[in-house]
Amino acid sequence: MQGEELGTAPGPLRELLRIPEGTRVDLSSYAADATPGGPADKAAGVLDTARMGERLADLQERLYAASTADDRRRVLLVLQGMDTSGKGGTVKHVIGLFNPSGCRIKAFKTPTPEEQSHFFLWRIMRELPLPGEIGIFDRSHYEDVLIARVHDLVPRSQLGRRYGKINHFEQTLADDGVTVIKCFLHISYDQQRRRLLERLDNPDKHWKFSTGDITERALWPAYKEAYEIALERCSTAEAPWYLIPADRKWYRNWAISKLLLEHLTALDPRYPAADFDVEESRRLLLQGG
Amino acid sequence: MQGEELGTAPGPLRELLRIPEGTRVDLSSYAADATPGGPADKAAGVLDTARMGERLADLQERLYAASTADDRRRVLLVLQGMDTSGKGGTVKHVIGLFNPSGCRIKAFKTPTPEEQSHFFLWRIMRELPLPGEIGIFDRSHYEDVLIARVHDLVPRSQLGRRYGKINHFEQTLADDGVTVIKCFLHISYDQQRRRLLERLDNPDKHWKFSTGDITERALWPAYKEAYEIALERCSTAEAPWYLIPADRKWYRNWAISKLLLEHLTALDPRYPAADFDVEESRRLLLQGG
Image 1 (tube, rainbow over the protein chains, first blue to last red):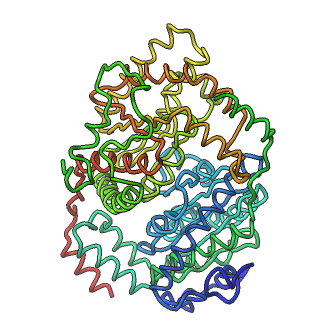
Image 2: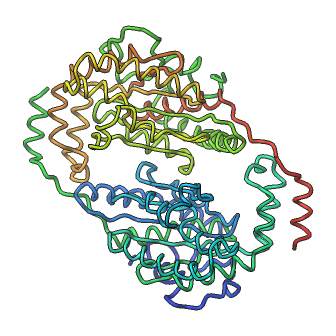
Image 3: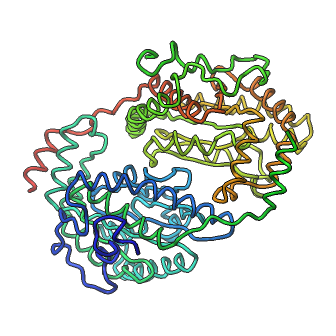
C-alpha cells in the first residue's frame, strides 16, 4: 500500500474502517462525526479528494482498458445508510470524479411488481457492472434485510436465510472478479433531523422530502438494529463492510474516494499490450495519405 | 435566449450549428478546425466550459426534480462521427460536468445476435432516458444507415426506408417530451490520421486502436457520403442535427456544453412545489426529538 502518499492516514484506510468478520456491532459506539484517518479539516479534505480525482480516473481507464483484453475484473460500490445519510451526495461528488462512461449506477427503489415476483437478488443481478466497469448501487439487496426486517415484509425464518444467501451471492461475485466495496454511511439521529429540516427550509429541496421520511425516522431504533445485524453477519473476508462516519460530508466523500483509490491501486490494472503490428499500422497510415 | 450571458456567441449557438431541414450537405464545405460562435482561443474555451458546469448541473437537478412531479421531459444527446472524432472524449469532458446519477449513457457496439434478430430500433428503445434524465448515445440508430450503407449490410430499398422510420421514431420521442440533440462530430481526414498515429505512438493508447480502424479509414469517402445523406434526410424541426467542427477538442467540448445549456435553459425545468404541509412536518420533526 501507499498510505504515505495517498493522504494523511497512517495505514490503509480500509483496515481502519473495515468491520471485522463476525464482530458484534453497536452503532452507538461509533461517533458519526468522527474523521478516522482523515485530513485535519474540511479544507484539507476537499482538496485531497479533488487531488485523488485524477488518479481515480486514470485507474478507472486502466481497468476498462484491461477488460478489452479479457481481464474480467470490476468494482462494485454498495452504498447503504439511513435517509439523508448521503448516498446520493456520494454518487454526485465521488463518482463524479470518474469518467461517467465507465460507471454503471443504479438507485434501487421500492421493488416493482415484476421485481417482487422474482427472488430478491434477481433485480440486483441485472444491474451488476460488466468487466472494466465501476458499478455503484445506491441502496441494494441489503434493503431486503433492512426495510424488510423493520416492516416485517417477510417471515423471520425467510429473513434469517437471506443473510447467508447474500454472503453466498457476494462470494460468487468475488470469485468472478468483482471487488465488492460496501459502505455504510453512519449518521447520527440528530444529524438526520438537521438535514430533514434543511430540506424543509429550502423550497428547492422540498421535492427531496416526503412525510414518509418522518414515519421512517420514528423507526430509527429498529433500523439501527437491522443494520447492526446485517453488518455483523455480512461483513466477510471477500466482501467486507466499511463503516463511514458521515455526519461530515467532506469526510464521507474523502473516505469513500480513498477506499476506492486503495482498492483500485491494489488491483493494479494494466493497459494491455498491442495485439497488432504497431510499425506496420504506422506505415499503412502514413502511406494511406 | 440568453446569448449575451451564455458565452461569446452573438446569437444562440443552436441556430448557428443546426443543419436546416432538407438542406443538401457537402461536408467538404465545412472547415473541421473552425470555431463558429466560440471563444477566442483554447484557454478561454476551457474556462467557459468549466464555468458552464455549475449551471448545467443545476438545470439537470431541476429537470430531475420536476420528473418527480410528473414532468415527463428529458434530454437525449446523440453523438455520431468518424472514428477518433471524439465521441468518448465528449462523454468524459462534457457529461462529466453533470451529476452521473441522472445520466443514462449507452455506447452502442456491433449488434449482438439477439439485437440483430429484432427491428433495428429495438435495442435503441431499451436505452432511452427516463423522465428527468439526460440520455447519451455514443453511436446510435444512425449506425444502421451509416455502416449499414457503407458495407451493404441491408438491401438499398430497405436502407432507403430507414430514414423515414428514424424520423418517425424521433418525432414520437419529441411528442413524448424528449428533447433530441443530435451532434455530428466533424473531423478532417488529416486530423483522423494524426489521432490514429497518436494512439500508435503511446503504448497506453494501443488498446484503443485496431487494424480495422485503417480498413474503415480507407472507406472515408463512402462514410462521408453516408453521413451527408443522413444529415440531409434526418435533420428535422423536432430533432435537428448539429454540425460540430471537432478538430479542436476544446471547441467540441465547449460547443456541445453550450448546446446542452441552451436547450436546458429553454426547457426551464422548475422545482416542484411541496405536496405536503411544510409547517406540520417541521413541527413533527422538532417535537420528535
